[in-house]
Every structure is written in structure tokens, then in C-alpha cells.
Length: 623
Image (cartoon, rainbow, N blue to C red; front, side, top):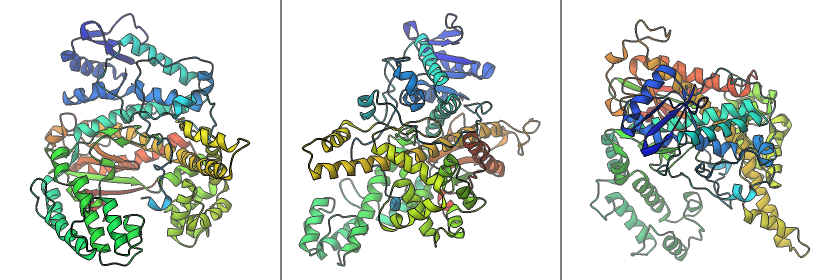
């Protein structure tokens, strides 16, 4: 059953069955809507259809209402209205989106591709029944050029969630439009799985914020004091920063140097005979000068102070919980972003502050070599699958004789996925092409399509944006009769840059889909575990009644007694769980990884092993 939610006359909340839109199920004042959600969820377990999870779900969670599944029209529309899987339907002019539908978030840089990292910089809502499909080997699908200008424009990271909310009838119409796009698309099964997983991610993002990541202010402050010294007064720098700053100024003979100004620091370094072009620690360490090490130390301290210092602690941590605002689908590839708090960039130094509540523990898991394994599954490269079967994939490449060391294996794989052509990556990638031709053909094809200005598409149907107008102008200028050699070089360089983006897009985007399915399946398993107890039909029930557990009160009324997700970072999750359920939760985390692999790759025997630890502190998982 589906229930559409919108706003009716006098601001009342409407609940409508899309199959019978003329017979509203309920219409109530907003203050009474939580109880209606609760009742319908209990009686029907419907798929809730609404414009945006962020408009409805946070208040429901605060009222103690958990929903199993939904269809987020904003996120799903952003996928369906740009996917090559629906391109033919859209090219016929069918199913245009309504004007009131806010754009989904895509944060692709218009030019420069600064967001594509160098390889050396690396580091249930939905019902599973009916979604299984044995997908054929995927080749990136070029899209048509319709809507190129729209696709090339940058959209905001985060749509405004506070605007007018449409009526339930309008929500029903848009839901039907999206369902029609899926049904008429070239791969309906894949699209159904993707929009279900994307909507699950929207629910999970809201739940992560509601529950919060357990965070000890005491531990965090002790880290800051150990690194920086005592908390300074307003407008002052911590003592250790002042100490190293004084050393830098003395060594550079620049007593008034502003170390927070890169321009001033570069000028002082050059005046002291250090011909550096940047203040990155990698380049600084190429030079010998007594100011280098204290300058690097100052930059480290400044980063800690600005990103996770006392001001950050005051703003983002309350009641022993860190509650960032996640943006599911916040990047072009479908990876998540955050709109505040920096949850996706927590330095190791402060992870010791992530501490489980008394009577609770943390299950920390990350998928080992996720993107290379996803590439293996997408390409159905059997030789690459054998290399990673039952072991570390990078070690498997060494044992197969492709490269000499594990470090070389990592550089080669990352170089293949990110389009490296020079240095060690450029030397090693051809060996991969000989050993694993199917995998390399897939990413090479994606790069060629990108260089031609075409879209590429993930396993389940998320498509890359088309290049921006500046890119197309650069390519066009190189084909003019009066084009110069400089025009041609610039066009080749920008084409290669966009090809690097599309090469990585198909793998990174498909890996994001695997992670969404992993979390969505795990979310349902955790809810079942939290509801179990003696006398339960759940065979995994191993503990006393949930009500007998020591509550994690700061996690809110939905999660205070049940295991729940508290953190997500691309291929890593943390579950906060009562100690008595830790082993069962760990099994659930592993089981969901297996399920996700089967959903995406059918019977192809690709494995997704996890590095998993049950710890009291996040920092201990790194040990």
C-alpha cells in the first residue's frame, strides 16, 4: 500500500491512497498528524509518498514515530529526470516534471574537475522481494543531448525544505509520473531498486541526525588540550599555536608574519630562500629550512582548531551527541555530503571522542576495497573476482603475479579508476589491462564517452551530468578553421579531464548504490532486533526484553533501546547497540553486505568482505 501525504485546505495534512485519490484516508491538523502516521504505519506499513523526507520525518522521529519505507519525490525525480535509462521516454516529451518539484542535489564543479581526487590522495524501507535481478555486464550508456543546458548547470547542494508543500493530489500525480518513467524505462528493475534505495537513504539520513553519534565532550576537550593547550580567550590562539608561530617568524626573520595568510607565508618563505609554490606539507617537505617543520605543525594545529576545535564542539555537540546534517545523494555520483558539521571528514585525532553509552557498544564496519570489487562485479571480470576471492584484493593481485607489492596493486587499481597516466600508476595500469581486460574495458569505455561529452550511467541507473557550456565551447573552438595549437591542447586537456570524471563516475556511483542497499537492508534487520525479546518469533533474539536494557536516552524515543545506525562514510558504518546484542548485530552487518552484493550482481560470485570491530570507542577500531 502507498499513502501520499500533502497539504490541503487551511493547512491541514492530507493522507491519500494513490489508487483512490478521490477518497482521502484522513485530513487532520498538523499537530495531530504524528498520531495518524503512527496508526497507518502500524495498521498498513505503507510506502509513504511525499515530496521530501526532510519536510516530514524529523518531527515524526521526535514524536517517537519510525517509518519503514517511503518514496522521496525530490531525490527520485532527480535520478529519473536525468537517467539515460529514461532518456528515450523523455525525448518524446512525455512525463515532464512539475514546476513545484525542488531539484535534487548534485554538486559537480562546472569546470576544472577539482572534485576528482588523485589516486595518491585516497584514502526496510524497501522490500527486498522482487528486486533481485541478474544484471548483464554493464557498459556505460551514452545519453542523448536533450536538456544539455539544464544538465550542465550547477544546482544547490541542498534544496529549500521550508517552501510551500503541494496537495496530496499533486503528490499523487508526481508519483504516477515517476512510476511511469520507471515502467517505460530501459531497465525498470534496476531503477526500482535504485529509487527504493535512494529513498531509504533519505530516511536513514534523518535518523542519523535524530539519534546522533555518541560523542564525549570530556574526551574531545582532553584531545584539544593535549594538542593545543588550554582553551584560549576570545580572539586569541591556543598557547601551542602561538609558540610554534613564534618559531616560524623567528626562522623566517618575519616578526609580523600572519601565518594564516597563505600569500604572506609564501612571500616570507621565498624571501628566506625557499622556492616553494604552495604551503602543502608535501611540497614544503621537499625543502630544507628550519622553519618548515614548525610551519607544518602550525598548519596542523590550525586545521584542528578550525575544523574540530572548541567552537565546533559548542556548535555541533550537545547531550553527548554529534548531530550533523547529512545530504543523501548530495553529489553527482550519489555519494552523500553534509551541509554542516564535517561528519565526512572526521580526523583520526578526534575519533577517540566517539564513545558508546554505558551498557552499549559500537559495531564499526567498512567494506574492504569496495570500489574495485564493484568494478569486478559490473564488468563480470572472472579473473579479477578470483584474485579477490576469500582474501585482500590487493594481495590477490600480487599473488597472481600482476604486480610485485601490495602498494603497487593499490596504486594500479586507483590509477585505473581515476585515469592516471603518469608516474607509478601510468606504469602499472597497462599490467591490469592485460590481466583483467573486461574490467579495464568498462572504465576505458566510460572515459571515452566522457571525452566525447556523453553521459555515463551507474549499474542501477544514475547518470552523470553533461559537461558545462564552457567545456563544449572549448571543444568547439578547437574544431574551427582558425583554431590554434593552444586551442587544440586546451580542448584535449579538458576532454581528458571530463573523461577522468566519467571513468570514475560509473564505479564510484555504483559503489554508492551498493552502500545504500547495504544500509537499507541493515536498517530493517536492526529494527527487527530491537523489537525482539523472549517469546519473540525472531530467531535472532538473544537478550532480555528491550525495555529491560539501559536506555540510550540521548538517542531519542525511537532509538533509545534498539540498535541503530549512527554514522555513515561512503563504505563505512557505525551501529550503536546494547552490549547484549553486539554479536547478533555484527552478524546482521555481515549478512546485509552479502544481500547487497546479491541484489546488485545476482549470482556472480563477487564477495564484499568487511573489516569489522566491536569497540567502545571509534578510535579503537583503527588499532
